[in-house]
Image (cartoon, rainbow, N blue to C red; front, side, top):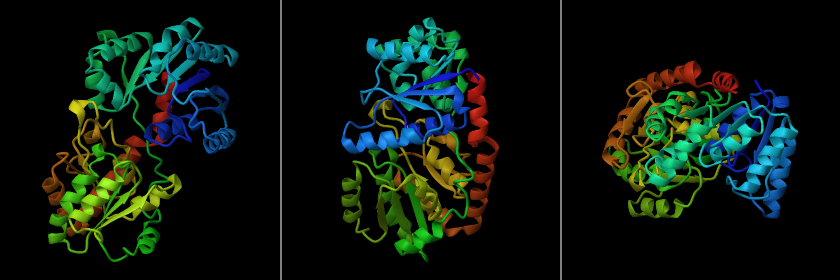
Length: 380
């Protein structure tokens, strides 16, 4: 692999799925061949201290820009060019293609021989807007490869590119650490702490925002409880939608049947997945396709933990489920569909075990980080 400059807004300690993806990939590359140029997480004293402590622990060089949002401005482009030359980097990996990929021509002119840009869900939204579509086309022309999460994002983004750029696209989704997410990850202890030891548990691990579909799960619970009276919905994570979700649960009289953990530290997530009998996140597409699920790594983490999954049909979420084998895909925003699948799973331990085991095998066969890191090395 060439020595590589990673240019990104999405890097820990800023939380999020893209951040975890980039960090996990970077850790699996030769640290002597990696330099990260990233935005600052927070300007507050706490944010600065947390960022400095995180950067000091990394095995590779991390350079922070003073801004909390990198944009392809002349100043940022000049800094990226300077870092490329200073560290002798011959390749560039843009952690998110849009908009940072617009710096590709300048970095090419400064000596970059390989330029890879990774797309996520938001580029699929860009492809629908005329001005953003034009910029996305420029990014495709300026890079050697655009990577994509799954077929949904590939098809939407490719439509905005030239034929040549579309032909150069390569799939590079996030991976799953199958040694961290596995059956027996500590779920019994979480259930005991929450008083759920003898109750069937539906778990949803995600940020609390409307697209994720926690409201659909709450609306499904009365139907679930009519068939499985002791069932509990465990909602793991924080976000701006929490207050509305709590009011929704209270409206349905579900204060005992819907539990909120609030934000959970990353190292505790495997145990919280393991606290469930079934994983569910019936995500839906919003804002005319601009707010869409890129892939849904949570389904794969749940599968690695040995849980069957119930997923929504938003964007690329179905790419993370073998429908009928590792779980089911339901229409986002359809509580009855979600409830019917959840009841079927909660009533049938053999079905849960079979789907969970198939999901675990699928993760081991296709979604392990080491397999995906090998692909990234080859691209760079």
